[in-house]
Each structure stands twice: as structure tokens, then as C-alpha cells.
Length: 281
Image (cartoon, rainbow, N blue to C red; front, side, top):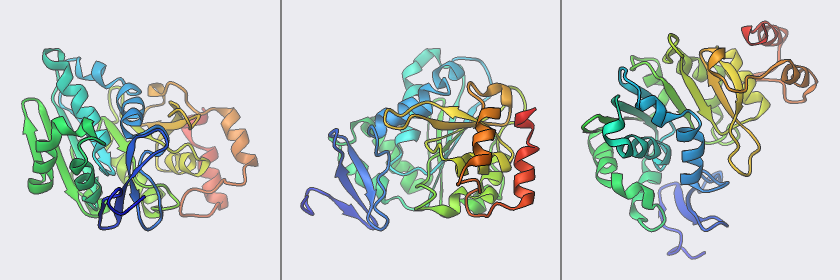
């Protein structure tokens, strides 16, 4: 494609997927955001329908808090906000989305392509306010941005999360975000009482699941994206998982060539921690 067909901003460009969807690609490592079925379909399937967001928002309760780790082009955040807004009078809870991002170029590119990202347009003013002021609010909806390296924010005080959208670039392209240290920080801010919190991510890789277990989560299989047979759902409570990993997964892990967590080696201590995890009791 020509430069004109692929608008660029900093390290990013817009591309057209084979199915016709527009998406954002990183110019350095070449990874595309939501490459399989297109951004909107993946966001709705994995991050709205899978955790039954509409049902959660229709029940009385305190504000429902989402930690959106990897804002990107804001597809996941806007999918949640769209769900909340469309509920109208049926919504019984405030929705608070807290997004973490190091680079706003993907969002700027997506907002500039109204035809390619039509689902963002109802929240154009919200996204512009978010980038400008770091916060946007309307009745019952609140969206905040933590711009920069996520780790210092995860080391600080945050509202307790009911849902985590964990959607940074892949471990191959962005290894620092997938370590036990980072995921343990994410876990620290998750709700532990009641039905607990869910973390949703597109990665079903064995090292991802091992790292989540080591970080203190219970881990299960997540919905298919259409091209990926499985994704991953983690929780602070095993009972919250529809398809928790069981002994069959553990047996496969003991024979796997990818047994180590992200960013670390498999030591006897790591192996013992995985085997002793309450997931298997």
C-alpha cells in the first residue's frame, strides 16, 4: 500500500486486514492490534460478552471498575463504554474504566479514520478529552488515563478492579509487560471478595498461563476469537472460572517444551510453586 493508504503517526500505521477491517500496526516489530477477526468483533467477544458485562452493570452495586491495560486504539475501552451507554435506564451501576498506555498514536490514528473505526465515533469527544485532560465523565460513566509506563501506576493506589482487560502487545514484542512481577502488581489491585475479579487476555500460550498462576491468579480457558481456538481468563477466585485449567493441563505442562514463565527460567522452585498452586486442589 502507498504511504497515503497507510497513515502513520510515530511508531504506528493503519493497515487493512484481509477481512477488510482497519487495524493499527507497530512499525518496529510489525505486530498488528487485534489481527484475527478485526478489533471490534474481538473486543465485544472477549471483553464484553465473555465477562457478561451488561448483566453485571444491570445489577445494583458499587461502581464497576475495569483496568484496561494497553489502551491501544481504545477498542476494548469503548466496547465497554458502549455496552454501558446502550443499557440506558437498565444500568444500575456506574462504570469506571481506567486505561494504561505509553503511546497515544494508535488512538489518534483510529480517531482520524472514521470510516475504518466507526465504533469509536460515538466516543470521539470522550477520547479527545481523555487524551487532553486524562479524564472524561458523563452520567454514570467515567474514563481515566494513566499515560506512561504502567508499573509506577500499578505500584500506587488504584480503585479495586472487577475486570482487567490485559491487552498489551504480545510477550515476543513487549516482554516486560508479561512478567510475574507485572502480573502480580495487576493481581494486587483486583477484587478478592464476593465473586472476585476476572482478568481477560487474548494469549493462551503456556508461558502466559504459568506466569498468571505464579502471580497469584486461578487460570482458565477463555473464549475463541474465531481464529484462535482459546484465549485465557484468570480470576482471584477459582469458582468464577467457567473452564478452569485442570490436571490434564498440568500433565501436558509437565511434558511441554515451554514450561517456563515469561521473562524467567524454569527452576525447581518455580516448578514447585506451580505444582503447589491451590488451582489443583
